[in-house]
Length: 479
Ligand code: NAD
Image 1 (cartoon, rainbow, N blue to C red):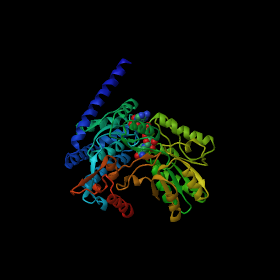
Image 2 (cartoon, rainbow, N blue to C red):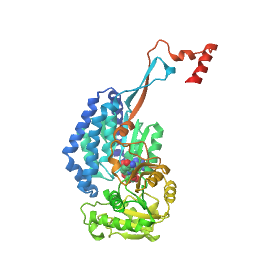
Image 3 (cartoon, rainbow, N blue to C red):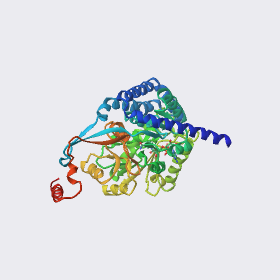
Image 4 (cartoon, rainbow, N blue to C red):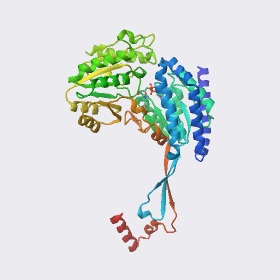
């Protein structure tokens, strides 16, 4: 017991020291040249390219994520984000000249992009490399210092990122601390200027409460259930292909995975058959083969395995029909791609984010039911609509609220560098990626310069003479 306490204390001391060093450094960074940020980004890019195999292997060791999947969902988004930032950073950081209203004649105004200061970035396990690196790129781009806390659930990747950060950065600029709940809680007690958190909605609330103590600004990239609608006009083959891919990449453990399907009753049968075909095309000729597919990963740990299995069991017990599934294996944490029909809203699987390869399907008759169903639940991070009918697309777009919205596609909006990425309310606060990520770590400082010998406000200084009252009347009437 005594040993544990002393370890915690030494870690707390180390974190506190680094925090103080970063606070000092953050002030110097405000006036540092842009080329310093670019140089950090260049070093980061080079390290990633030189160590691509080690990164992919670490993620594979953590939860058997296929190497190619890591290539396009962990390495590519990070290097392309770095390149996008480098290309645009000069433009993003330049002062923005602003028009001055007539009644403030004699002054000029600009918006300066100032780094927020010392930032905390907390990441989840489900894209363990990319979800720590992408906010780091935004933090560096905006000129901040940062302390990073990866997930304890993917320890191999976290250890490799720690090595990377210690090789690339001075700890007074960027530093990484591994650890779970206690490390995270201690970090959250420090007065950071900005906290960028990616993880569950439940922990997001804890982070926001902690941030409120210091009035730190927050970006919360959270989760939830992302509905997928397939109407009677949709191209069913293409819909099934894109939904199956989006659902099963990362073994269903993606924050923007299509969580469940609402399908028009007329096309339900056809959609289920196509989904089965597409899953077989991707992962084997039948359910018993999915287990051997090299392109299919595993559930991250036993807790999550049991959780997903329980959700499925509850649904089956309450009347859901299993359309396609293989035998799950607790030892290897394999959960077979599974389609469930005859699903109802009272089943547990419809109450929490699934985060596994299980696809529940609910039928509808009228699109109004779909709109009501979505609006009765917390706002989604992603909403997907498959339809050829513009009127239906528009109806869902305009009558629901979600962080992101895709028509006839799943997942790929994440990699669109010019689109803001993030949720709304329960699915998140604030945005990430490209310019929007840069802005999350930036304070838009308003700068007003008075260059005229007579300030317009002089006309409003007391005493309030008849002349000044007349000026006030004119202002209210005309400006
Ligand atoms: P999580 O919320 O359990 O953990 C995220 C991080 O918070 C980890 O680093 C963890 O150590 C830390 N943490 C956990 N409990 C904490 C507490 N009580 N106090 C302080 N810190 C704590 O999430 P997870 O299981 O790692 O990730 C899965 C969740 O993340 C899903 O809900 C998913 O939808 C969401 N997610 C969202 C996005 C997005 O971009 N919006 C991306 C990926 C994952």
